[in-house]
Image (cartoon, rainbow, N blue to C red; front, side, top):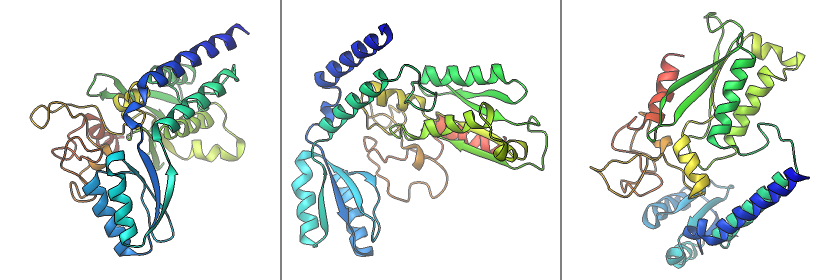
Amino acid sequence: MMRTTLWFMWCAAVMALSHAGKHDAYFSYSVHAVLPRDSSDLALLQQLEQQLDLDVWQYGAPGREALLMVAPQLRRQLLSALDDHDIQHYVHTENVAKSLEELDEEICTWRSSRAQRMIFEDYLRYDEIDAYMERLAAEYPDLVTVVNAGKSFEGRDIKYLKISTTQFKDPSKPIYFMNAMLQAREWVTTPVTLYSAHRLVENLRDEDRDLLNDVDWIILPLANPDGYEFSHSDSRLWRKTRSVNLEVHATCFGVDGNRNFDVRFNTIRVQQNPCSLIYPGTHAFSEPETRYIRDILRNP
């Protein structure tokens, strides 16, 4: 009972913080579902994405709707352009800030109703994820190793799990690499990797034993810890890293990790404005977070 009471008190504090302005940056921002018909519609959406600095929640295709978040002062311009080209659209989310507040409340209510939660059933913070990885390695030392790839821009350790029955000494075994949370706001991805580790190590079914015996695993649950923590504490929809390059901009932070690799760098759906969510950085692998992924793949 005491634990439940404490959770309700914590939820109340979170709600107070929310209503005190945590999500105010998205007040009156809206999300619109757009139904492109063909390649010309898609080209227009890409043009509008650049012109209006739209936040694309889902890229569209013929038969698949796009989800576009737009600032309130640019909403009319977006809708007029869609209407001028007879492109169907509807309001998906009227007020993003209100929607985020409601989501906070739902998460708190769920947490307060469950005294015991599995590691993969919640959106854990950095320290909790780190503690789970260390515990897993301590309890299964012949199977699990924790490796520290290095420091994030803000100084957090970026750790990953190596899971193997042969300590990665059997070259005939394929290596599966899983990573999550390079995009800081995609919270659902980290529980998937933690669930995978849990099933491989702590709850392996007989019918899945070949996945452990015949395959080596590298699991990186939190590739961008700085951005992830910032998405919890300050801006839920933050997606970039948190690096600062004073030669580029003094007040705009971070780089889009997905666009920071050396595959067609700076060519596909990018913006050169360092304040943009899809800013690729000054050069490929400018971010320690993407360099670590590269190095893990080069030398597993």
